[in-house]
Image (cartoon, rainbow, N blue to C red; front, side):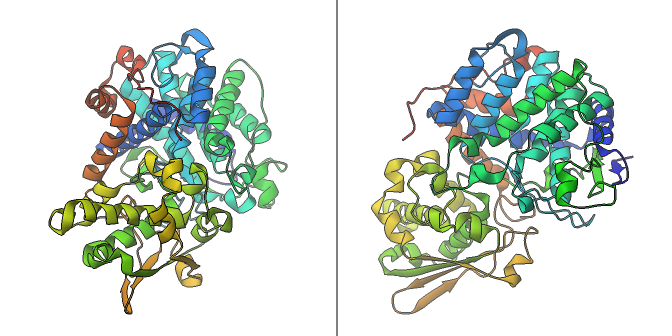
Length: 512
């Protein structure tokens, strides 16, 4: 069978454990699934190593911490061959991956099964599978299989249970998947995995308090990393014989049943794939630069307008107003009044006003530098030309006078029920630009921007290659070598996988 159903009336924690064990032995994901996961892993690593090269705070601290936990057998951190405690390698690498908030995203939407809880999530956890493979001396194909397994569990949980509804951080789903994947790759039994999942849910539930406040802390970016770390520690304890709570999804005092009351069952059925094309990763989305993914519809709408109406950037001084209309939760997350005047990178990359204004500024400057004849003419070309990069969130960029002038012209509105009902199927957004003299340009409703899993028009491979080159040049002495190694992960022997993250990182000083 290509899918396993874990009914709500069953012990789903044990079921996940058995599914994970079976998956690592006999799953047959298609070539398309393996290729897409390879791209998401490369994206994650390049985001992580560029954040380290630019000296960002949490990744630097956690990497230094990890290097102090040397082990004869263990796992590696980005930019090193030294073996360290696997949980320390995992927390360091996952934190680096998430720092830019620029890697893969899911929205927990599977209408074919009626599983549309719409929980967020990100492809932050691949270091769990790599660490397990390094520790057990497995090859790159096995590591890739572990990544697919982790995304399958994490992604399917996001389809059936909305953590954000209850102010719980979305990384809980990733922590459960991390425990299961790490255990299955290291030979744990289904019962040991069940025990570890029980510990994760009973002891380590993070609230979304880490994401509140006028200026965000390191805890926001490191949330997935810390949850992955404790998930792996729980799995290791369970494999040593520690007994965590059993049957945690039906436990009447667990987080799941406290928030969604049942008469004894879990709040959801869970369907997990093991063969073919129908895997959760195929519904996940790429970010094409540094921005909160909720803004992707607005970015696409703006680029569409520039392609159709180049006078918008040719006569930029005539721009009077930019009106963006979107759905909840985009409006509350990146339209939060506290983020309308961002002063740090962590707030700027969650500010609709800043993100859109910076992209528009870069388009205007591209037109000024190259002239009308040499400027990009297609959506794909514009994405590659003005993709938002780390330095677009430096202190200097955040204070840029032209960006601030454009921000003052942006009006961000909630589109109400008509927009809300279309999410999370798409990212429903519209952009209207008004120029002096009453000229108005309307993007119309954007649903599936470039990078979205259901976008069928963009050259996603070409745009990703552009993103990968940009990040690799920031991070590495030999960017072509790094890109080639990441693309070939499925073919790596155990010895080569051990050195996967030995990437000749450049130290470019502290990011400011």
